[in-house]
Image (tube, rainbow, N blue to C red; front, top):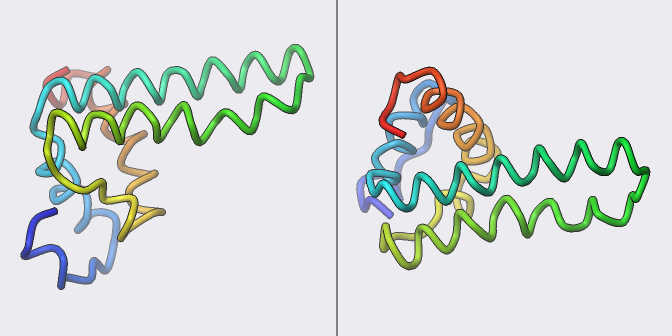
Length: 106
């Protein structure tokens, strides 16, 4: 984690998001985030159509598992989830949207 951000308190997601992106500079890390987020969407669709509600328990593993592998093995930093859980979750989805729309590198 960026030492400057460790002591910083973000007042809004707009303030947090540039920091979030700075913690996701490695392409493999970002792509693992995208894979996890996509798997979360696919699992949700599956659960809604199959009504196999127990699969909802797999959502955190799918979403965070891929992301944490990216941070620990490629980005070599601590996931922002540990300090900023809500903003970090929002950041995952905004980063995926920004990649799909071409605003950031896929």
